[in-house]
Image 1: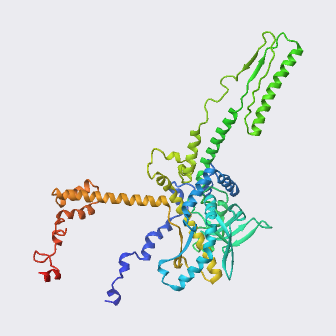
Image 2: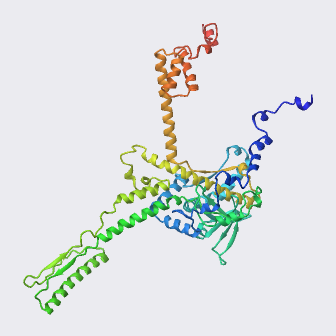
Length: 533
C-alpha cells in the first residue's frame, strides 16, 4: 500500500467540496446551452431594448431631461424638507463641536504607535474638509444619485481642498466606469466644453443603484460591453447611467400634487372674480337719455374696478363708502342677470385631494408627512413614542446615505495618502474607519423597544414556570405547556423544563438530581467553618 493511501484526509476536505467536483456539477452543464434552447421551450425573444420601456408612463428619457425634472422637484418644499431630514438623520452631529464625520482608529491598530500617529495625521488634515462638505455632498447625492468633489492636492500637504459648488453638479459631470469601478470623468464647464479628469482629480459620491431608470444610451453601451469577458481590464470604459436618486419613485406623486395645488389655487382665483350682467330697460327714452344712462353705468363699473385694483396694489382694504345715484325714468329698471344654471363646476377641489398626494409624495421619499411640518397627523393614534414610530422609516434611507459617504471619504483618504505618503492601503488593511456621531434616534428607539419587549416576554416565561412548579407540574407537563401554550421551540422548552426536577430555592441549589453535589449526602463545608467548629 502506498504512502499516499495512508495519508489521512485534511479536516478541510471533509467539510468542503473539491474544486473539480464543484465545477463539474455547476459550471460544465452550461455547455449544453445553444441558441436554439431559447426558442425550444417558449422562452421567446429577449432584447436589451426592453430596458427602454418605450410604452407606458415610465418611458426612456435623455440624460438632460431626467436631470431637469429632478432639479425642478428639488425646489419643492416637501421634497426639500424630506431630503434634508434624511441627510440630517444620516449625519447626526456632535452636540458641542457640531462635527459630522469622525476618522477613528480601528481597535486592532490602536496599540501600533506608527499607525496610530498616521491616523492622527490624516484626521488633522482631512477632518475639517470632510465636515465642511459632508452635508451638501450627501444632499446633492440623494437628489441626483451622484455627487462630485474636485480634489486639489500636492506632495507636501496631500489633499488640501475640495470644490463642490455649482460647476461640478451632476448634470455637468459625466462619470465613466469600467465594470462597476469609476475611473474617469468628463466635464462640460471649460473653454472647449470638454474636460477630462481622473480619479486623483475628482471624487464621486455614488448612491446604490436599487432601481433601473429607463434612459437612452443603454443600446449604445450594449454594443460595446461584452459580459462574457472575464478580464475586467479588457472591458471598455463606458459612461455611467443615471440612477440612485431618491426622487425617481416620487415623480408621479409630485406631478399629481402639483396638479392638485394648481387646481385648488386656480379655483380660489376664479372664485375671487365676481361678475354680473346688467340689463337696463331703455324703452320710451330718447337717444340722448340712453347715452347718458349707459355712460353713467359704465363710469360706475369702471370706478368699482379702479377701487379694487387700488386695494390690491396698496395691500390695504378700502374703508370709504361708495354710493352711486342712478336716475330712472318712470318704470325703467336695472336688472341683474345671473350666469346660466349648470355652467359652473359640479364639485370643488378640497384640501383632502392635496393631502392625499402629499402623503403619497412623502411616502415615496421614505419620510412620514408628520415629520416635515404636519405634526397634527400624529394626534389620536400613535400615542407616546409616535414620532419614533413614524421616523423609523427614515433609518433605512439614511443608512444608504452613510454607506455611500463612507466610500466617498475613503476615496479621498486614498488620494491623500497616495499624494502625501506615496502609498495606498488595501481596503481590508486600512487602520482607520469612518464613523458618524451617534446613530439614528428612531432606530435606537426601536432597538430599545425590541429589547424591552424581549425582556418582558422572558420574565413572563419565568413567572409561568414558577407557578407551574409550585403547582407540582413535572418535567413533561412543563415542557408541554411551554411548547403548546407559550409557543416556545421544543429544544428550548425541553431545556427550561428541567427546572421542574430541581430542588428549588431552599438550600438545594436548584440543580437537577443528577447534578447535585456528591459528598455522601452532605455539602462540602469550607475550611473556615471547620476551624470554627
